[in-house]
Amino acid sequence: MEIEFKEDNIIFDRELSILDSFVLSFTEHLATNNIKYVIISGYVAILFGRSRMSEDVDIFIENISFEKFLKFWSGIEQSYECLNTSNSYEAYNDYLNNHQAIRIAKKGNFIPNIELKFVKNDLDRYSLENRKHIKLADKSLYLSPLELQIPYKLFLGSEKDIEDARFLFKLFQDNLNIALLKMFLTKLKVPDNHFKRYLGGFDES
Image 1 (tube, helix red, strand yellow):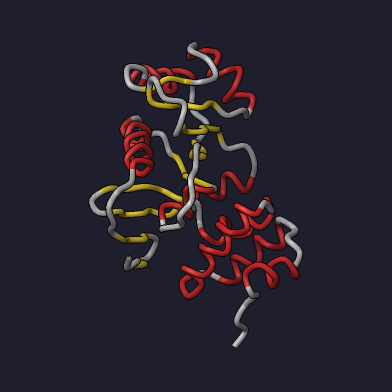
Image 2 (tube, rainbow, N blue to C red):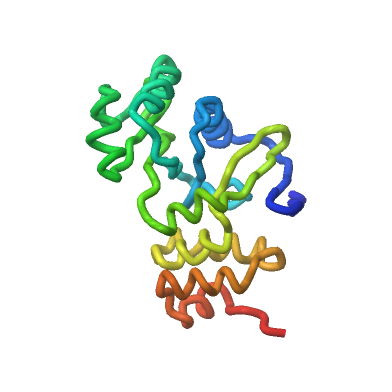
């Protein structure tokens, strides 16, 4: 799989998986409703070819009004269902506005599902404001910057997360802004020995 970097765009082509199609379909609804979003966490590695299963896809969205959320909700409710609540007001006020995720799946299916949250802190907002445009065949997605995604995965620290970080770093190390990546390693307080142990450290030459 050949991956092309072009300014803030990452361009590649491959056959879509069932999970890809699910994510693309859902994010098209977000885009249609002018809701700014960014995909984070495990699906980022999966999208670029990491072979592992995932039951959910994590997405941050900008803080939006209830009216805008209701329009989005009304547009998807025939095909999707919220696994937390069937009430749009509760989904917005009891979950999203309290920085809790709502889980949305295709009707009749529990997995895969989207874990949808409002941004709530500086790192969330950075991911959203500096999201990267992914062009997969003739489809578009927006992902968290890799320079934040890799340190974040090391910060989480599970075996699955470390393998995600290792996969992304190995695949993209020649295209990463290393100074930015180091900044996020420091910000997330990832020990230096973790980066060296799991990813091999930086090539300082």
